[in-house]
Length: 111
Ligand code: 5GP
Ligand code: ZN
Image 1: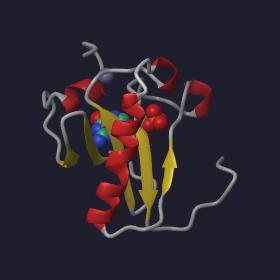
Image 2: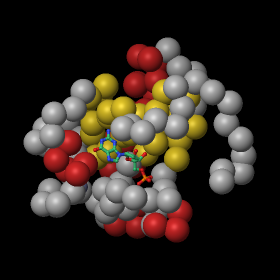
Image 3: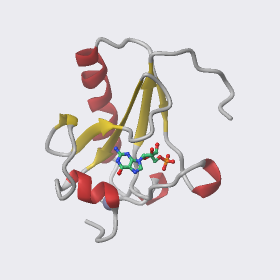
Image 4: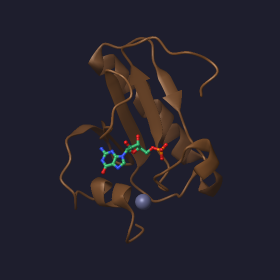
């Protein structure tokens, strides 16, 4: 838990949120400012500032194994996953999160 981290507060239920998924290690919730008809974030309950900060490989499995469970529940088969690492890559919240977006066409390369 990092005291000023908004996603820690969400994960710890200090800020009420509607989780679309929760297990022992991760939670998922809809993005406040969605960039697609479906846009949710998957975060570990433990605080890691970014991908560069993860010192336990299990965290990757915890996050990425949750995603197909959630998309299956939502009836989604195709989706974009994004992890922004560092400000110049677009990271604005420094608690690692995976964006999962669906419901429209996506272009590549990402802007
Ligand atoms: P980043 O730019 O760090 O990759 O993504 C941060 C994401 O978190 C943004 O898409 C932003 O809309 C979302 N976000 C920021 N604050 C909150 C919040 O308090 N609640 C929710 N649900 N999403 C948030
Ligand atoms: Zn945090």
